Length: 123
Length: 182
Image (cartoon, rainbow over all chains, first blue to last red; front, side, top):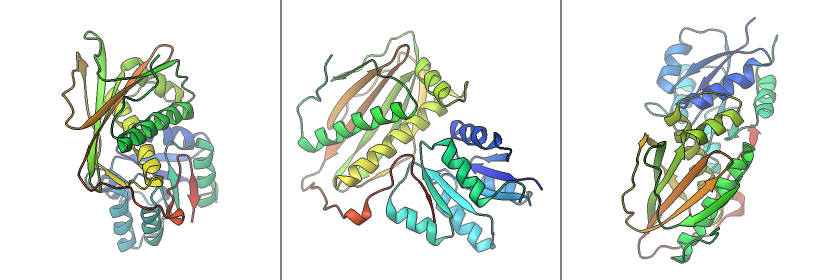
């Protein structure tokens, strides 16, 4: 079974950093540039096991995406990856079903450990 | 080497000092060694060299302004190399760095009782970039490494009645690098 992770960020640099960190251990990584792009791609991907998502993005931000995924009944775990660290925002994401929050710049080993916990390879 | 922020509004000094520390922390997170730094009232970029400028607006309670960040292509390359990425889009790289820098500043200011909200960065690149005069308080900070150069300008306009909010210890923001699983 493939272990696909989707990374959603409007920054090419961040998408590349996340992809590099997660491909190493063996994950398949799909990139999206914002919430709308992510929803379009997720509709065609049934093997996505984890979403790593920025908060501040054009067109649809990470919180709005969480709301949409919740409304759709999605069970794919979502971890936010963002420069934001406000407790209210973290709590909002948690209440919408997010499984974690990582503040940039991220440590690759923390991201990999998070992926291993929420979407273990080979499981 | 000039290390001090020019004398001004004490709240602006507080913000500017936090911006300097946030920049130093961010460079350190990528193992980028700062060899010199200075605070100056103006910035003149070399006219023949390609630079990228990112600007992000912010607004708080009776304070608003802009963070401007200007970097050489070698600075962007040093950062992407340090991030283990190699070549990447110049404007995207500097925009993301500005985003992280202002995010760090936001967290620091929140701990000081100065909450702010941020816009998304706008970037422009070219040679001979010049900057307009800021409307309120302003200060340039320059950072140099072995082969890269980076500058930040913090602008701030304070309205009468500006004051620092009381800080609730239970509402401290998450710090850079934190990874929280719910």
